[in-house]
Image (cartoon, rainbow, N blue to C red; front, side):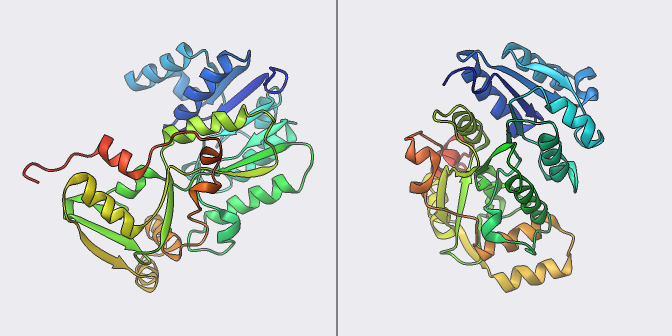
Length: 312
């Protein structure tokens, strides 16, 4: 790749995913004469908190330039002016930013004349899921796709990664509930789910952005693993040397649970993943498999992050 393709990259946000992307993009940029910046809230840049100072120190050590901006509160024209000097903008700002933010960022990228925009779509295949799903936040993601596909000046890349691997083991999500020695199947035991770790997403995003020939105007799929909930339970047993209880949560059961608390975000996610549409794809179809890039499987993640209890 020549430096004229990507002379400047702006990453929006430095949370878990943003930092993973920045670390990998900065390494590749260093050998390509590419300038990398990150947009952070003024309060973050001015913070004296130890964790924020550590994060900012790491970014400076990576050679990342720090740019002040407020993606939630700044107007679309203000953001467009901030984005305008950059050839590629990668958004790592998720749903926590609030409704309407994803549309605003896409419009700002287009208005600012950004050559290529990578929206925050690091998740499921919203095209397959379609509008009106149990997770109403997903409709905005489809709005973003329509905006980008409906214009010609700003190229785009959508990177579909599936669920963060760690989310399978999040106690509140309760798919793998180690405290109760239980694995819950969302939908059924043969329902499949695709997962990728944030670290792998960062590495693969950098590879996609710096790919030669240039990738643009397409959906790119990644996967650390694609497996059924039955295979997930088997993997937990095998790696941790235990025998978990297996409980199926059917789609009607999960829909009834959601009806009891219709604003519960986790219950919305459970329904969508239980229905099994647009939440999994074959490993062979992924960017990492086609490029033979090693990634972290669920078994790898368990081995690195979980310990079997004493006596098992």
